[in-house]
Image 1 (cartoon, rainbow, N blue to C red):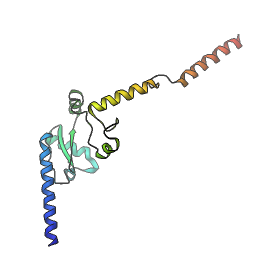
Image 2 (spheres, rainbow, N blue to C red):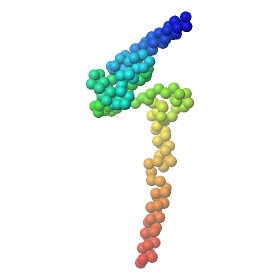
Image 3 (cartoon, rainbow, N blue to C red):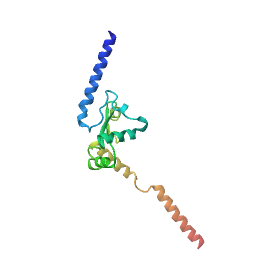
Image 4 (cartoon, helix red, strand yellow):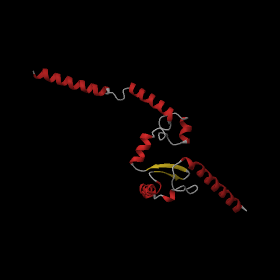
Length: 161
């Protein structure tokens, strides 16, 4: 009786997992069919993942999707694919991943885990503030050292003359 309940629960979990993976797959580039819960992890050689991804690019093209568990990852293989994504389609590829724990802690603020308009505003504010504190300018220590060198040089001239 307990075994039947266990099998039914596992079957339901498997079906839910399949449904969740298939519902989101339409938004992503093609790629190998993922296994429920495991994704494509068994199709990749973990010791040489770059070779595995290179082999998959021969089948699916320079832009394809692999699943690590239930999480999809879009792979850009080759210079042209990376250039097109980051330069030509920069806005679409500028987002960050979803990190629920980090979002809970910093409530969507900060530079590292935020993205989009909020990230741009935070970055602009941070850089402006850092510049006001002297970032990107010669530090006071360098100026003092330069003045000290000039003073020593002038003292040598007067002492030697």
